[in-house]
Length: 444
View (cartoon, rainbow, N blue to C red):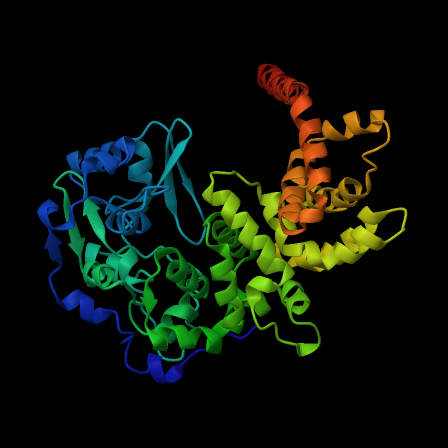
């Protein structure tokens, strides 16, 4: 796909609306003003920043974690930014790996926790008529440039946990107080540089409950087709983040309104709007109803796997075959229906196989005769590694279709009664893998 170049905007010698922020000193907000308590800062994130500063580098907590702290939410992770280069960062920490092609970042690990640590980057510098899509982004820059090159003002704040100060180059603190999502620079340029920003815009609007600049929101519909230029891995990552957000119904509604869903997942979009017929309320569609139930479960603390997320999105593609077909190999049929979607988003073969098994399992859940004696095949089924995912999906289905509540209770009891056996089998499998890995290392 050809990326829009917007020659009329590039003509102004790189005046993409960001460079004005480089001409002004940052606003500094003390603890008395911002009110962030050190108790809410992850101890290891603090240690990383402190160590980098002790070695003479600039280092801050940045991005979504600062936004969340200022809006009363608990950050899920803490990203760090510094003027130290990736190899220098790696050398300073015992467990650290440099990853990424498009973005070279360092993963610093403490136990199971991973902290993304990036080097300050500069604003893209282009010639007239150059394409806007950023394919590489490893030109290092200053603290102010790194802030100005980010997507939204509310994500561009630096927090120094050592001095307990917020450094603001782009009026992000003001926008958080005004409950406003503002693009840094020109929306049409920002969206073409990184089309994923369009998805994040509607996501942050739903998560924060903030308003969004009307011009920035309108541009999304105009440039929605550009989302096809993004790597499938990044798209899938954003989709999973949306599914875990607890407000996926609202976000997907916005993805439909802005036409993003049409280009992200055309098969799903076509099922929503067959023969160009519009649904008056997205939440009343089969997909909308599933998302609503899933959001309720996530709000209650339920952990749902990526395979179930995929099932929620793609079930309508295979639903007729799964529920009504008498074909002897429903897995084969489902595979055919899911091939295009799986190729576009490039989810792994294992994920696709598990998804197919989870979807065709729904028919078995529905049609099992509760009055007959329990079959030995049931005990075999419950031991399958995809059974829990299948049951989670079935629960979402049954919360919509109340008439199947007896079926749900039956299968939940089966799972509960076999839980210890399932865990023993999984632990055995994990131990065998560890033994094999140890044996291979010794042999080499």
